[in-house]
Length: 582
Image 1 (cartoon, rainbow, N blue to C red):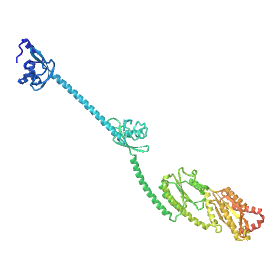
Image 2: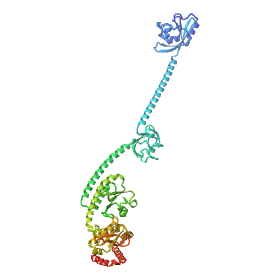
Image 3: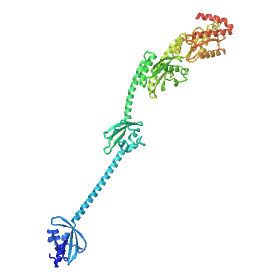
């Protein structure tokens, strides 16, 4: 290649260009000349295969279709050292040639690439960070959903026990309304006294504490928060498990208790078959029965065959004063006549007192069981023991009634003097121990000797039987009418004083004055006349009342004969007969 035939100045100017320059023939696109900068740039890379500009610059066998265009183009060429070089070139006409000026933009391209790479790395980092954030948020959302599906209450709290976050189970807690701190959830206004985290959560490692809130049992697991200061709390409702354990334990206790009850009931049934007193049976009953129903206080009161009296009583854990109050109330007229079924509350010794009637086989009350602090849950056990005990008492009372028949007067069927003596002794005991008064009424039939002499002893017997019937019908349940001699009777009035005895004798006298007649075998209607005298323990000593009543009776008899002098002679004879009998 030869430079253009121009002046030396032009050659020097071409060589002095700071940029690499190439002169190219416009006819065949062969390279005519390269300046020094171009030679330095391409070096040995320019050979025969690269004799054209398009081969050198674009690695093409064909000329560029717009090679004469005056615009800046970019290209990459392979240098002699094997490295790629980034160039920008511009083609222009110069003295009949194409002047291609080359600019090395390798540094700029590398810088742009570095910047672009940095931008891409940053963008990639941002994308990765955004992706990680989305994944973290997704994980957190998934974790929060999982926590919200946990049936136990989960909370995070700070060092002051203030609730920072809680799951739905905690929000549904029975005490969650208005709760700001964990101790509010367990129904407290201040931190728990034995809280493991009272001095901070740093030393807390999976410690467990139990709570009872509104009948629910809660187990709290306390641990330290690994992210922030404070703690993580998990409340587990263990009510079902604890109640199940309690039920199992209760069932076991019930089985043990039932076995004890059945064993005690068998022992009691065996004991009552033995020849023992009712007092001994009652003591055995309380010994076995009270521990079963979890009390140490009880009283048993057993009826006598005669209403108004107590056959026996057994007590445990009660003072004499309270026992006396119970006995007086039980012997009251309303209680003995079954107008009321239980001792009135004001007479009971304890606020919570259970009264259990002891029933005989005929369904009638034969006694009363009084227990302290016993609820309805013991009804079944009470009935198990009370029923055979009531039957036992009933059988003993039937035996006593059979024995009682030996103490009746064969003519009238009323009690004899022997029975009256024992009845008086019981009333005297009641008066001494319980201050319950009694009274006696002495009755004597007028003109009995006249009836015997005039109409025969059958007539006298009829008069005696009629008088005994009249007296028996006039007394109350629990009173005793006894024949103490031929025409003499003694009436024991229980739970009454002189005033009541006076009213009783007045009622009898009024009935007699209205006319009570006995028809004898000969058809004679004989008037029944009885002289009466009374005395009570509220006026006289207990060993003086019979004597006083007897004196009043004879005073009334004297008054009768004064009013009927025609019967005086008969009366005198009768007194002689009576004195002989005495």
